Length: 281
Image (cartoon, rainbow, N blue to C red):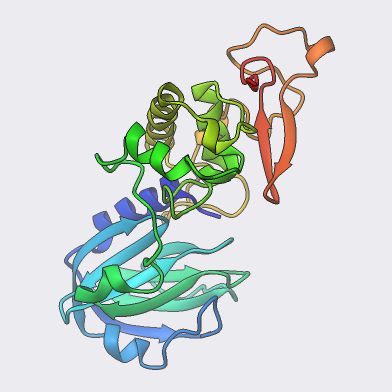
């Protein structure tokens, strides 16, 4: 699933190619996604100009000249493609948006994604965003905020990082990488995080996300940029999907430590260095 860096990369690509452009027509070939695409989606979106493109959490929002906004999420396998023509469509190309600068194609093999619309003035009240937490780059995200959100949570900090109602946009890859960078055990209880750890973790989250954005995100399976190229932050992962390897900052004896460990938390894989991320009691 595209996480914040991947969505940010897609957003910037959209801004370069279609910001301030005109949506001439829309064709929806399949309406059955995570939420059914509204029957009037084509009528609402067509013959409008794009006023603004931005990101909320892992969603892209496109404000239109008719005071409606597109809300777009890519699910597990969704991706956007830019094409000059539609002569060679794929069977999973479900939505075709024609602009005066080419075509935007939404391809989603599993159809776990979402695309809908709402009135621009109501965007913050839309049910998708009603329980969304603070953005990782919001200046209001500090140790005080984070400790207040964690103080009554008897869950492991890795699980808390994936809770979109606390901090939005952080997915499994970047939660593991940020905890490693902050030298915090993924198993530490959220309510036991102290002020210093909260500050370190926020700094590490921002550091890792910024590095991933600059690298165009991580391509592990389905993710590609709209131009078809891949991200390369997977080449900079320190622990994610590195089971059995020595982490870049460790000099442990692999014969004794067996290197980076893999565990399951909240149904998701966690990767960590037992030597540098010791759980304190």
